[in-house]
Amino acid sequence: MKALKIIDLTVKINNKEILKDFNLEINSGEIHALMGPNGVGKSTLIRVIMGDNDYEITKGKIYYNNIDITNKSVSERAKMGIFMTFQMPYEIEGVTNADFLRNTVQSKTENFKLYSFIKDLETETQNLKMNKDMIHRGINSGFSGGERKKNEVLQMRLLKPSLVLLDEIDSGLDIDSLKIVSKNIIDYYKENKPTILIVSHYQKIFDYIKPDFVHVMMQGKIVKSKDASLISEIEKEGYQKFEESRTSDIKGQEKNE
Ligand code: ADP
Ligand code: MG
View 1 (cartoon, rainbow, N blue to C red):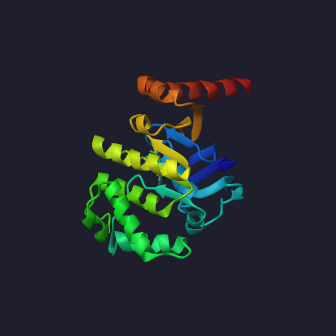
View 2 (cartoon, helix red, strand yellow):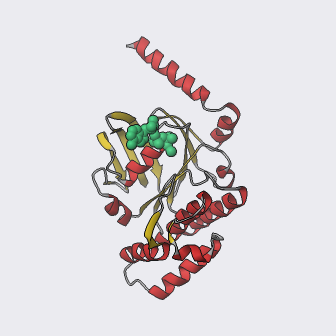
View 3 (cartoon, protein in one colour):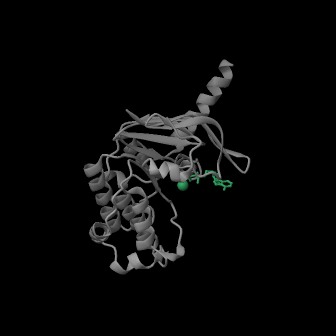
């Protein structure tokens, strides 16, 4: 079954078109990588799938498990099992991590048991090699970039989403933290078989998390899709050649018109 289906999605912010006729399909339980240089619209796509209504959808549809979610709210989508991690996770004072996590897990869980939640929280914190006291601090309050990324993965492991959108989960991580974060994502995948879309610039994370498909995005569109071998092509040759092939495609189209 198609977990995610995006058809001709066109998205604007402040009157600037960021995604244009964007198409993507992901089967249930597959891992897809979305790669591309800065500013091509990767984070925009992730936020729009999650339902951020700062963005205006001027055309197209998003389906999740065959349900049209294009106009659903963030919380409706979260209830359906969609989850995203932020490229730059926010700091929120006044709410502790533990309270935030308990509230969100509780709101999603019938027969919520506080005791087992606390046990899970402890286990998952240890799995991520996070400092215990971080749980009782404000959300991301005083956390380093890498600790924030671990905190995003902690949320994923506790909320148990079925569609996971990871926006540069690897950025700002040292090599040991990258291994820990990747292992926690892979273990979650093995246990729960979610559908995963990972955005990254770099190939390193894909040494740990093997995608079934890789897409290259340029200027609001996917310009190339292939198996994982595309990652080493990108590493060797950069994104330039995709830019060139896109420009020649457009020129070819113009000639034909
Ligand atoms: P990526 O994640 O691929 O680096 P983004 O999706 O963050 O790219 O951004 C795509 C483009 O949209 C960029 O040119 C960025 O400047 C622009 N953009 C994103 N958010 C806004 C906004 N709130 N207002 C205006 N432009 C924006
Ligand atoms: Mg981004």
